[in-house]
Image 1 (cartoon, helix red, strand yellow):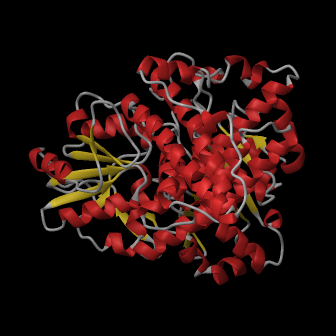
Image 2 (cartoon, helix red, strand yellow):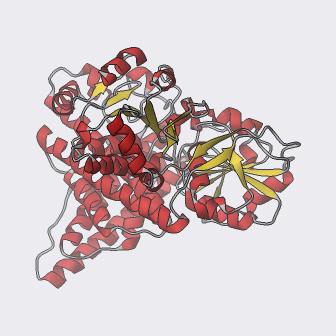
Length: 552
């Protein structure tokens, strides 16, 4: 095992025995093998697509399978092994699709090698041996590089793969809402297929930016899927403490699963609470219309062990980010969709009867808590509806600068930086935030500026399109580029969805981004130097120094 795809990779040196996330060696190895198998599927699907042929079942399988390899999604070795075997069958289906398309087009179907010709071993141990052939050698860690082109190429290939993993996560959520994007699937196949061929560092950087372009289209698609299904988010006060009664806690990211649960619990006397990245659900009209969507409980995903332990009801984990469950709540924890943990009951589809039964059997809350609340729901529609006020405030000098402080939360020390930075932002500035990193400061009162809250919660990481849309709209209003706006971006990253967003920002040409708390271990020094020279991408330092530079 060697894994360095997340920000918390062991001491910055890669996880080699067991993941910091809790993933064991076998599961991690099979996930690497699954990516290899999906490259084979993509070799055929890409060529079939060039001839005008596609298959929505192949599309759905590839997206969900890539998503299953993200940090904190699928920890179940058996389920990942099943996906590997299924990938071989889907590859054969893609080959038949390509062959038929070639016949219809009157051209010869080319024989393909590499992952396209790979066959899974019959036994688990032999399958794991195949997976170990795909492992990244620990010597490829960027800190150990000494002008070794092969190692740099491998690191760049991993950058592309990790970006695609983030894209797949966003595409998966759009698929769950019935939104299909054939052009996006075709680009996924094109990029994965390209990774089976040799490339220069410059070509791989181009592929990374292509991932960024693809991600922009996918998060735009997801935004449309959310608003068309649930309505455009509007500001909403969200209760922070529970109400007396039976309870279900929903964590993760998937609004579709939450909606189905709300439908199935309507009238049963069970209160539904959001957790972590589900907080922005309270801003959507169709979701907040349910009276038993009672509030938000707890903090970010990294707090789930203590939050879930104290919650006196059942818990539904949708998509990512799951941590190793404590025995105290394992029997009342359920997973759905792509997320899985060995020993935790998995819900196939959206029949949440077991979750409801567990909630009714649990004691629930004995009394009401305080009525404290926070506000969410400042998506791009809500913010741009008052764009005139914002623009006037900037022109008169009443509003000096916007600070986008957001991204993933994590357990590594150094993330207090984001709390301290938000606290030190001057009173004549507005803070935009999104994703679970906001839990570092979103329960503080930052006051108002020109009638607007100084802290505007744009939503979950799946709502990153809102931030881009706001920046683009303001740039158009001021007739300037995004880099000329009074806007500073300070991002925290943890996993591959954040990598995809960063690649999108770079594809857009956005400069002067600060990221932390550490830089990605899979970026070689040469690539970091190039990104700094071309985009002035930089690591965070101290809140005081960075704030002075951004205001200067």
